[in-house]
Length: 376
Image 1 (cartoon, helix red, strand yellow):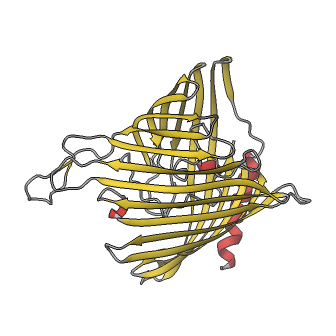
Image 2 (spheres, helix red, strand yellow; image 1 turned 120 degrees about the vertical axis):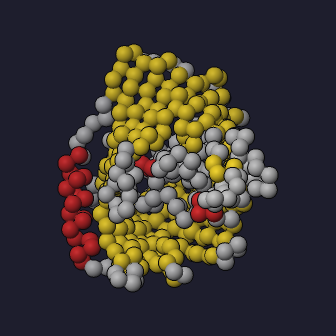
């Protein structure tokens, strides 16, 4: 890659990390059960994309933007009543993207019993551990974006929906469940301009989503999953999820999706290995881009033993496959990455080379991304 792509942006990112490295997490408390804590997540990114510039769109383009800028708050108003919210400016500064602040998450979570929580609000839908992972604790530079076709009913609050959710862990934390009902697709006119009105989902039927996981080691009963525990967890789990978006108009089918997955986070030698494998099936008109078919992803990372320096290195390899037989579309993406974790998830840098990142006019196009993360 050209030197101009790496040198200047890397310097900018290094200065940003140094300026905020000493920040502390503020917490306001009245008593043990009444408190509020704020956090901030910034992911600053440089991107080089093949076949995305030039007169004929056949040259590399370069961009610098803020992948995520989130202000988050979580707190408690009672020993059994907690809450969480976050705002975001996703892809701020990226070419062609609005810079508006959005309401990302917001819910109240009530523990009715030790093994039963019920929450109401806006959530990342509980369809797979990939979707429900914390953006601040990812293994790769981002989610497996090519494999996730979950729609976004709430503008720019990606993969989120408004609804009611239950979750819990049973059998000595061996069996985890979470799921609920959500707004899903609201009524709108499917017909072309001038044609007779044909409403989508005129009954406003609700969406249902759920997943279950069998744990052979640690459970993760909280709201987010941590896909890169850095030694804090021992994970060995398998599970499955489903998503049904109904359509109450005659002649238009419901949208159904399901997945199976396996995840592991275990010590290996003096380091740690992380593995996630997931397979999705998407059927129906509601999925992003009208995708109907199958997708799959496998990602593997190895947290290397700590050396003489302050930080730790973590190489990451990912494979993502998309197969849509209706449009004769198949794309196999390989991501080769390296993370440098100066202070775990608080300060880190991630470099990712995406081979066959996407297709442009029927040809595979590649991308290179560099990101620094600040989370405090």
